[in-house]
Amino acid sequence: MDVEYDNSIFYQSVQKGVSLTVAFLIGTKMDVLVDNNPNEKELFERLSKEKDAVIIRTLCNIRSNLMLNYTNTERNIVFNLQNLDRQEIYKDDIKTLIKNDINIIKVNYKVNRYLADINALIAQRITTIKDLFPEWVKWDYLKSLFVMPKGQSEEMIKAESKKFIQSRLSYPFTRYIYWHPVEEGNILLNDEKFLKILYRQFKDEFQDISKVKDASESVKTNIYDFINNNESTVIVVDCENSDAYKLASVLKQLDRNEIERIHKIMLYDDVHTTKAWAFLNKITNIPVEHILVDRIKENKSLVDMKMCAGVSASYYRDNITSFILCSSDSDFWGLISSMPEANFLVMIEYSKCGPDIKNALIENGTYYCSIDDFCTGNIKNFKMAILHNELESRVKDLIEIDTNQLLDDIFTTLRMEISEAERQNFYKKYIQSMSLHIDKEGIMKIRVLE
Image (cartoon, rainbow, N blue to C red):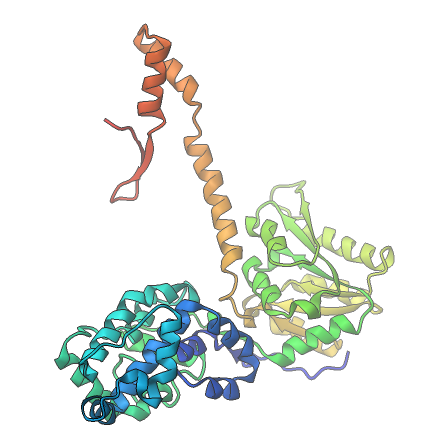
């Protein structure tokens, strides 16, 4: 496989989902968004179908235009008797709001009163768009961009309008946001730049760069070419020397149509690794074979041996011609070098893989890339499924109670004679109504009604 080797930490591309969602919501012109981000049409189409997103976008756009065109708008209202719905710059937005059951047009209203009402509407509705953003972004920081504090105060409205007009070039796409304007160029250029600037506004630092960077298109293309240029491909994972969450992010970031030719994913796992491997099949349509390798000696893993045997069997018995090997263990160089007719692509982790094995792979013509470079901000459902399962299993062991046996034990211990009606009344009133309570120290107890 002839490829151009570019395996440095710099071969990542930046994500734009968060920053472009903000750009959409603050009212940036759609043609500007699409022209500058032609590969993000699907995002803009999805946002345009979200009622709450459209409402916030429209309100923000009217607010910006009222601030920028304050004098002309006020003059048209007072002297020309043209309310906002009759002024060209606001007509389409007013129609959009009415279509969504919101009518902001009032008689004898001036610009500042309209701004106060719009500020109130944005503040009331801002939480409706919270789910448009990933959980790992601090919502309070994002929310602050849209909500003007004391937004019904005429003094505040005038101060913010003045600041916006005087520093309009420091506002993204000349749309109003509530912030301390700084000269940073286009702050919505990409997620990394935007979030770093946003967090600094709160004297905080955005550090989780893995959430906002992804492997470059050239890396992904090399993976697609490897799959498409070979008759049959399997992904083989050394679960002891790979990260389940990072591999999940790889599978989520690669184009589903491009990787659908992969025959299966073979997980060679040890009893001491994370339970997360068992959930990998929830994020991909590729069949997953989970091979749990028992230990003969507690201090000796047999995953390496089992995996080498499995790869050999797949090649010689099952006619699998190519393998995407996920491991940072240099021991697998022996496997690769002993099967020269098979094709290998290796996925490593920077922190676990030394220069010797990398050089050996390059000299052998074996392409490698790092799972560290794929964006980890898109595996929410994968993580939640694992967390839910773990919580459920732990809580079940803590509080699984046979309530009928409990009731029998209570009456037996107290040596109390009781009718069936009294028993049922007690059961319904006190046992069926029991609830879990967590105190300030985080201690969970079963609470019985008094």
